[in-house]
Amino acid sequence: MNVYHRFISCALALVASGPIASPKSYAWQAEKITDGLVIPWGLAYINDDSMLLTEKEGVIKHVDLKTGEQETLFRLPNVWAKGQGGALDIALSPFEQDKLYITYSKNVDDEGVTALASANYSNSKISNWKDVFVSKSRTDTRRHFGSRITFDETHLYFSIGDRGDRDNGQNTMTHAGSILRLNPDGSVPSDNPFIDNNKVLNEIWSFGHRNPQGLFYDFPTKKLWSIEHGPRGGDEINLIKAGANYGWPVTSHGKEYWGPISVGESETKAGIEPPIKVYVPSIAPGSLMVYRDDKFPELKGKLLAGALKLTHINVVTLNEQGEVIEEERILENLGERIRDIEISPAGDIFFSTDNGNLYRLKE
Image (cartoon, rainbow, N blue to C red; front, side):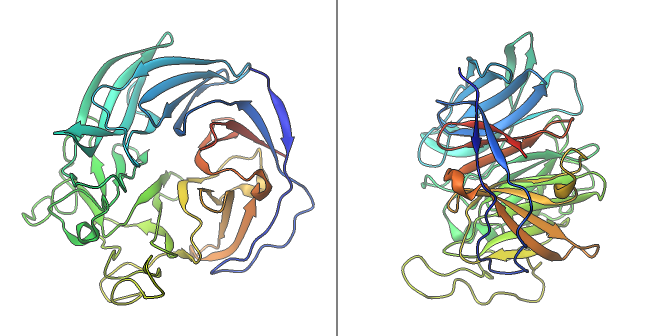
């Protein structure tokens, strides 16, 4: 596979909230690593030569980052690859060597539910596949499965969308519309916020989410960040707190798809955690990371989100109080739906697009 550089100018766009960034004196580039992938949904950096990724149809592939060569390593069993379902996120375990976690839509009685699986990766082979946790999130729709994986010092988090049923956002007897917190083996941590509440499933860490497709734990600040799709407008960046309700569909900044009518009762409401940032119109976020390396000092400490609908990397600057003070949109001219962003230990930024491409960000 040929590797080539594609020059992309850094551009700005009108934003819904927060100041617009001033033009930079440099331009960003996207270096293509490989192409011809089938919706590369999740990325997992292994080392300088290797990356694993999921293709939405239910495949895990290895990509040689030096040559761009691809190899299919594994086909997910019982994957429900319909609508927005299929193979979703993939992440290298920080708790156990050579272990992977994968979220996917599992075929349960010919309908899809978001599930978490584990597997071993060694010597370019994937083995010991098993389901760690199968959620209670079944609906008859093909929408809003989530799902991203992240880790704190001792636990695993992953997100599940409302599965196309708005009422699930406030229904705490389903995992749909929630962010879950588990032990690495899939069991429930004893200090989860609803562990003693028989009206809430024990795995739920937060609820009231529509479709969170970005989730990231920031170790230096010990903060859990999420970004989720709103309806027509109203995408949100949220700072996730244990036991908090994020409002969907009671509160929303979006409109109905069928007309200029507000969704929900109001934009904010007492007892509901407000978003840190709202996007109107929607950017359709696909991922979220906090950049902490020195390789790109101009990005250090900023949130990076892949945008699907508005086809760019969204860069959000926060002040010391955690408030948004600037938004910048880079790689807009690439014109591709940016799905996942992965940061290597050396500070390299890789990202995938629905066009089937894997890129490395360059200045």
